[in-house]
Image (cartoon, rainbow, N blue to C red; front, side):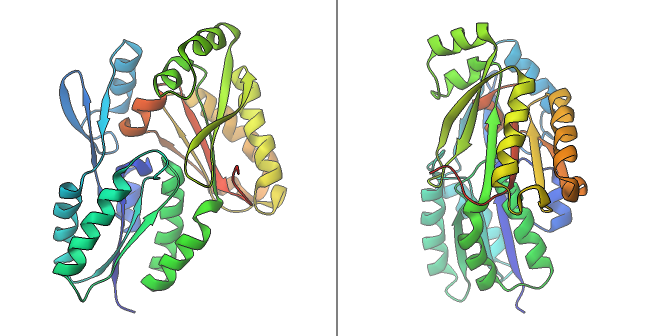
Amino acid sequence: MKDYILSAESIVDLSQDFTDDLGVKIIYSNYELNEKIYLDDFGQSLDLKSFYDDMRNGSCPTTSMINTASYLEYFRNLAKEGKDIIHICLSTGVSSQYGSLLEAFEILREEYPNQKFYPVDSRMASAGVGMLVYKLANFKNSGMDIDTLYKWAEDNKLHVISYTSNSNLEYIARSGRISKMAANIGGMLKIAPLIEVGDDGHMVVTTKVRTEKKLIQTMVNRMKVNAINELDYSDDIFITHADNIELVNDLVDLLKENFKNANDKIKVFNIGPTIGSHIGPGAINLFYWGKERLK
């Protein structure tokens, strides 16, 4: 089998060691905080505790998409190795950078006509993209060729299911998911919205739950119905959080009680600055392989 490169973006919200061990190449996003520009590099340029504390203290970080020029610089360095490339991109439902990826690949195909460049719109964000990348990396490392891998990614990417929430509604209001008035009322009532990603890759508030305890129970209840093989689910479960490890530990306990075949498949990571800038400190995400997404 001809070797090839599996590539992704730092919005996968995994860790540098984790992606290095998998052999996945990563292009980093940029963000600005307190008039200084940082790389979104899994908390290496700025530790994530400091990042979220700054947000709690009133800082409003801004993010920028990866543009065509940045993709070209990154992929030209990889293409020099003479290998084909498959790249998993942040959802078109939350960013327009997939268009920049397509432009870069069109140029690269002219520059390197004997190499393949496969783009995948993940229709997902954060470690939902990461979970897809993890599966693909395992297939690649087991010997799957790039054409088969690309087809599997396209055929199965919509089976990555995500549940997202933050009981501090201020940050979700900033993103435009809910109004500022609704955020103020919801905050007083301790309401947490449950956000899901649909087949089109867009994020939608599907229900509202009072208290974080009921929130994580709602997440698990939905997973019990929609997970592949339901309570016999034995595949990966990824959790990401924005400095809210106490809630994560409660969620992990619930998952272990209900999905005993997946107890050793639960992995916890931090939400990085690009995604964290939009959902804020305290946010939590749950990802798993399911039957279908929100329609």
